[in-house]
Amino acid sequence: MRLIDRYINRAPSAGIKAEGYIWSAVFQFIQGKRGNAFDDLDRADEWADKAGNEPRKASHNYTRVWMLYELGDWERSEEHLKKAFGVLLEFFPNSKNFKIWYHYCLGLVYLKQGKTDEAKAMLDEIRSIQAHMETNEIVSLGNARRDWLRSEILFAEGSLNEAIEVFSSIKNPPIPQLRVDPIIIYNMPFINDFLARAYYTSGRLDDAIAEYERKINFDPQSDNRRLIHPKYYYMLAELYEEKGNAVKATAHYEKFLELWKNADPGLTEVEDAKAKLASLKN
Image (cartoon, rainbow, N blue to C red; front, side, top):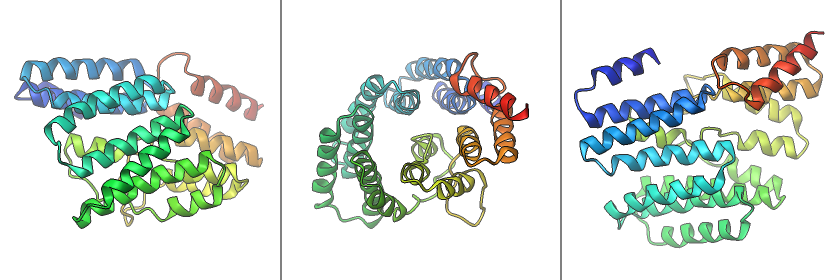
């Protein structure tokens, strides 16, 4: 955060300052400082307006999509998704990749609203677009988005084993360049715990724990460079507590609370972690 603040203060133009505020918003949000995060996105909008850069604001709305998605405000998430892609598809009207990206995101948001049929329609749109694609890199990325959405649909319908099989076949996207837009796309949705959720729902507690452990332990030899969301520690602590491993549950609740020590007051996860930690120590 100190480096991001320096980046914002030294930005030589309004457009670059707007980018700095997106970085700040992302890191504020995953620390549980949600009010600060949305404020930073508003500031990013203001600087994009000063730069006369309307497409820049598509990234700001895309970031809002996944913040609201994580917070369970799916109607507003859908609203900002349509705003973001309204701009992107205006500037790139012939991009099959962008169209697949849009339908994938919209499908995920529909599923959270219980609109399984609408999500399936988005999956059909992706398959229709893919039938006319040629570039290998775009095909690979499109396949990953298609299969993620398909996995979530299967999960929603209770086909857990098939969902796990499909999701397990997805390859990580190429490691992005260190620029704000590729990093945003690469890291959203912020929480990527599909396999852990599917394992847990199918009764495979140990596999779910192992999956979350992989999420929090960085492997430099892997092709995964996603940010480690602090909430993984909270989720893992809950599973260790269910398993009866008080030592590891305690350690992970403590780690989560350390990372969210400056989170907005009264957040459910923080209050719950504090209560469970106190119970484990008694």
